[in-house]
Image 1: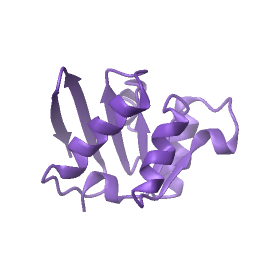
Image 2 (image 1 turned 135 degrees about the vertical axis):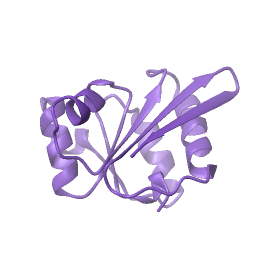
Image 3 (image 1 turned 180 degrees about the vertical axis):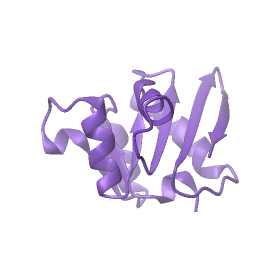
Length: 124
C-alpha cells in the first residue's frame, strides 16, 4: 500500500488547509485538532496506532519516539521543512503520492523539499 493510502492522523502542526486538500483528494484523514489540543507527541502516536492511522507531521520527535523509545506505530510521514504554506505542503504530499513506494505497517517516510525537488527516504 502507498503511504498516503493509509488512514492518516494529522498532527496539530499540519495546516487545516492541508487536511482539507487531502480530503478533497479522497484521502481518509483526521486532524488531532478535531480531538482537542494539549496531547503530547507520545499520546498522538499512540492514538494514531490505536486507530491504525499514519501520523502526518512536521515534527521529528515522532521518529525519535518510534526508533529510540520503541513506541509502537503504524506509520509516520515526516515533512521537512515544516510550517510553510498549505500549497507547499500539498505539493510535497503529491510527490509522496506519486512515488512508487509500497509500505507495510511500521514505516517512516521523510520528505524533504529543496526548491522544486522533493527527496524521499523510506525506513521500514
